[in-house]
Image (tube, rainbow, N blue to C red):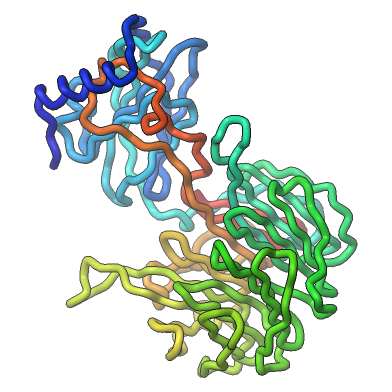
Length: 449
């Protein structure tokens, strides 16, 4: 537990004030009376009614009864200045209870008394699902998550993109409220990905679409007429698309594509970038691995079932590796097929997850697989799986997880310090809390945050 002495706080206050040349202080303001805190995955979201001209600070600690007077004496104490509702607080430990309070000020004045402390216990996302309003009637085949930087404010703007049959395309800032993308495609779109700066969507006949903002899209030539079923990227320098008849094409920018020799004529259903490896899976247990996306090697999957999804995650160690996180590769497919690997080279069949077909699998803080009849299954280690209640009987075809953005929280500063607008202390606009979005038949979409 880290504690801060009065002397340290005084020095921090003096340095902060001096560095910003603040000479006129404002006044304190009443704390909000309607604060609500909702636990998330490694996070909590605070909401309250903001008043014009009032600045808010959020305080949290891994202990009950945090106040603006005692917070620096409590474990995992943090403060986020110039907070806005809703405020996403990240970096929390699942299963550990935290308390939160908010105080307020006007014109960078000293903070007033804090709101009554509220408690929340973060937990894994993926175990509780909410069904969204159907996005049209077309089947949605793929979903991805990415961000862009607002050129005016500098804030990070999150985006989900879902695509499907007949060229259906939708975007969302939070995974809950969706807007149709007005771009005429006319062919089925089966895949989507985000590289860090570029969104791509692809589908039947080798169709390929390119966008940097999810609003304006451009058709690109993929160089193939085969159907494309899946896209992935290493996040910076390589895009990979796979599809019918063993198709593999790659690109360095999402614009110019080059065909690669896959060594198979089997349809490839999914590709994923996994801890330094590109892994593609497909019909009759086909499994290909590449370290550079150029040269592909067939690896024994020890199954003849059609494989439809593959992902990489870190799982808790046990025994001599307890307290560490270990690599785990997971692929799923028809009739609940499960195969796993710790090195991407040697794969082991596991007990089928379900009797239904599984279409896709994702990992953020746990593995989540989706499939026929609204089936959703979760696992923290990749080998033992639990079915979750999805709330739908629609076939689910794809799943994506997000990541969050946050500002830097200050530690060890007095709550009565003036709130100063320096970059390190101001939170950026937060994305959605950690979670998953699944999509499927008849525009079905589900969220778990």
